[in-house]
Length: 138
Ligand SMILES: [Zn+2]
Image (cartoon, rainbow, N blue to C red; front, side, top):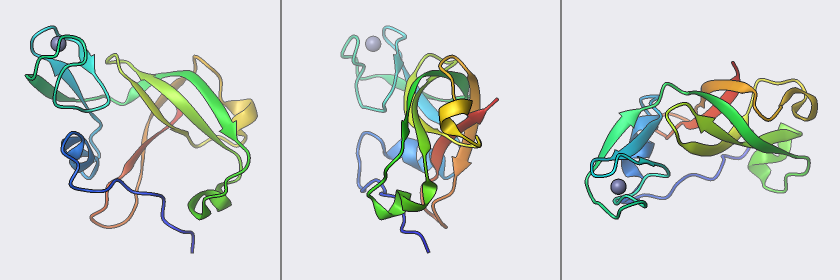
């Protein structure tokens, strides 16, 4: 059996609501009540204006590959069986950027392109564990 991927360590004050939402298969992001900036990664203040009043939202999970790299060698045991895989920055349509994997492609070198449309696909990590937001071609 493959080793588990590294997991977030709790308590995690800034990102706990994000990780809890992954158990409901909801990809959450924040906006600032003061200046309306879109905030990601999750945190307790707005990085634009310093305001502490933020609101949580659920992303539709649709976006575009901003850039990517294909990992050919994985030394961590959890990734050893993956073979080559794509790590990408995905620009979600709501205006935030998330680093993740592009999955559901036969050959990440040939099948992943900057600018391609992708949609969210959750990867389970076990019962009562967080789920990981990944993306597949839309
Ligand atoms: Zn702000």
